[in-house]
Length: 265
Image (cartoon, rainbow, N blue to C red):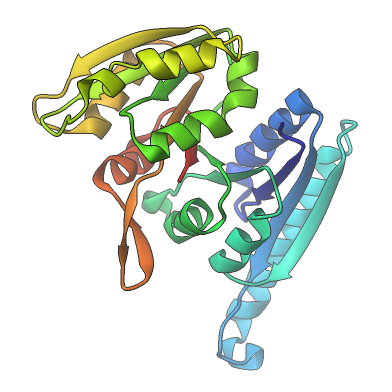
């Protein structure tokens, strides 16, 4: 069940599509939506930051105002929060929600949500949806593609996405074969397909071979070839000095994604 959603609001009004996308999820599942944005959290005193601090707070309050105005148009249960905190604060808050919604970075325009996404994915214990910067329109579930490689993270993502899979018009298991395959029986998807069928979710299995072992490239190519509304995949990473960093496939997807991506770790 998805009944409680936390959204990271964007300062730039041109990126408010993430707000509207999150609202469409809340509408689809009759869920409560909390819109959160942060002002600076730093060891440097606020008065030393001067105009930078004032500008940051003004932008954050502007995002809150736009959120409140936009949500008045519907009948959603919503709550805005302006918080003095960091990406870690967001991930800690997200532990008490069913789903986080964050927008993709836009490096060309100096917007980097990578640390925020990393924290929400690896530290919250909850799934999140990353909305592409080119997104147009709200949530659609006509066709959902689930990436499957038999791993723990893939299983976790598919299980967390069950509420959306139940509402999907069509669900596909997408399997990318590489040289690293160690259990072809699990990889073929028969067992996970039977499991989903017991949840009244019928799946079609699609398998491709990635000769160059570039899994992200294979997934992006598949998404580009068809009408995909949502991609479900495990968020991979590894520990480095007690911090998580994205694995290659996850990093590749986050930089070049063209559809909303539902991720779990």
